[in-house]
Image (cartoon, rainbow, N blue to C red; front, top):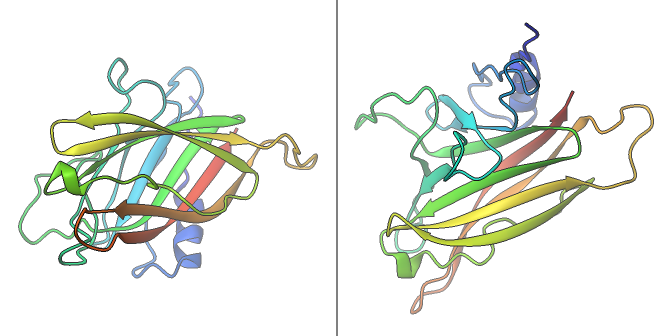
Length: 203
């Protein structure tokens, strides 16, 4: 069975992003049959962990998981923390799961990533611009899926490659952009937390 062992690619991307240490011991599974895992997300944390899960599709009716993040970036300018991911060790007091960089891998010309952004108060989690920035070769459509678990806003992000396909590489390749977590409370200035974000289209 053919596997996509993306360790070398992620190490290169991590080094390019100046992640210290420049390690990302994570293996993406087959995107096509027989495994058929499909789209996958992965996060590198400040603590050096690499955690991820299957993406794509409706997270309520499939085994895809949203990328769950939590943070109060308004009152304390705290980092945004990853709340899930596989493997999912028990979160200890000394573990650093602050999000340092994010990766999204999909097949072909499109992919879907769902993000749940938790906040101390759902009224503080009004995040109309959960993703901004320029993504070469991609169009991004964001759908607000409403409130989940009483503490999070859910967004579904559809990434579609532009039609001007490079004849040498086809649909395949990666781009580097920024993922922006945004909170806009009623009585305080809005704040953003920006992390590097790599999107890869693979065979």
